[in-house]
Image 1 (tube, each protein chain N blue to C red):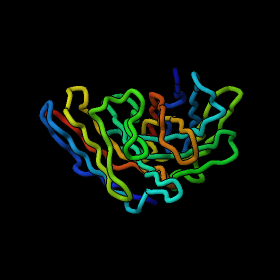
Image 2 (image 1 turned 180 degrees about the vertical axis):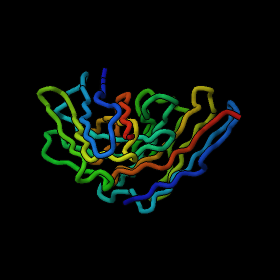
Image 3 (image 1 turned 90 degrees about the horizontal axis):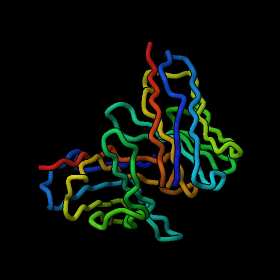
Length: 119
Length: 113
């Protein structure tokens, strides 16, 4: 069974940093592109970033470009999102998800981790 | 960026009746080389992550009941639930994966009338 379990969320002040993790199991992690998406409270889904299966290629939404860094450790079956210079508007539930290719649907999602940016 | 616009924003349908949700993209998501529409539909129930229902605009994901169907091509797409069940109450999102950034529609909230 595919499992994606996010962790690392919490309360952080504006301008602060946080690193999210997503532990994957039940599939060959190193074969899949991985994504982060987020959902502000009561709002819709927004794609944040993706990383190629071998970590060699990454893409970001304009709203996080230069502040967030996606990475992965295929030996540990873990996806990361380093979030710096956090803003109030980054407050959201952050989901990790997998896809079979660069341009592919998101077939499995984690339960999400809540990030709250507030003073 | 490709903008995805869903209609309506909310919808109330009686049990057993048909529900129809529309999605329009600001540019075509039909890829010429394989004639596939890079369009997916997701269902999100309260407190849960999204769940993939439909991909390539009309292919049902494994395990999805056949009362869910997708149609359309190019820029105009539709998700249809043929006979609404109580467990279908959720927010539904369309999503294009034709180009980055991947973008979602704003969501359509489906309720029981």
